[in-house]
Image (cartoon, rainbow, N blue to C red; front, side, top):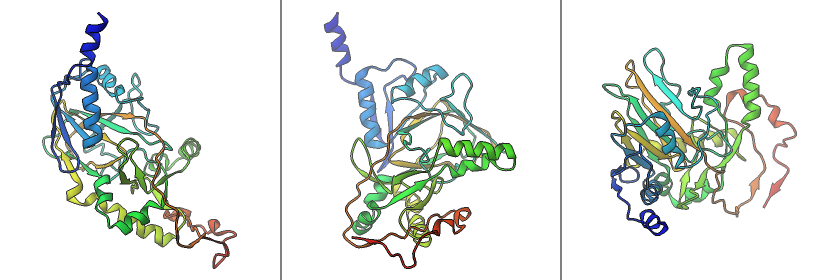
Length: 328
């Protein structure tokens, strides 16, 4: 019996991987996600995921329990601290929007939950209600975005770090005293996190750009106007069409994207029609970069912040002008 089981576990994978985009995107066929996936098939899916960053599964009718079970095969599922989830399944986020309940800042290039010290490794979405027109999801390869840079800029960005915050979700706590109290609690639970501007993928070791207008506040170690200019240049990279892949949703479709190496953008062009999705998020690890030792002299003059609310002058205390301390 043991020998037969071993043969089943080592049989050739049945899944078929069809590449759809130049830099990201592939369709997976030959697997029913409502059933337990054989180890050979799961290995093939994991390899395709790392290679293509975005995987599409069509015509998958799953119960919520089956959907969650599939998600767990990619790792531990996390609970989003700000999004609406189901009481019986807190790891399952419901994205249900129409003209009376529009989405919050999905029409902005971002990687999910970059405010965390350990952002998610993957995001899984399935369609339950699709609009008659619109509602696509755009994705961009931040690996291709890095590769497309001039080598001098690659080295420059690799030596920078960015501070991130859950700033887009702060709007949820505005307007009331109780909301402000809750905001203080969330700030203690999720303090600002610092990530490398150029992140190294933990599996394929490729470099990628890792900043987002949804969460990134400023670049460390530079002045305000320098931080703003650097970030504005980086924010334009996902907008390059050659780096993009577009998902047109169909009923019972599931997609999974690598949250480390991609960014996504969900247009609101389907409103006022209804669009309902269910999302799972897979736990990730702490980002690491490819920082090199700087050869040039660096002035320690960090004037914080691109947020107007932070420009109070308090962060300038004890800061010499010009800076008295310099490092080699």
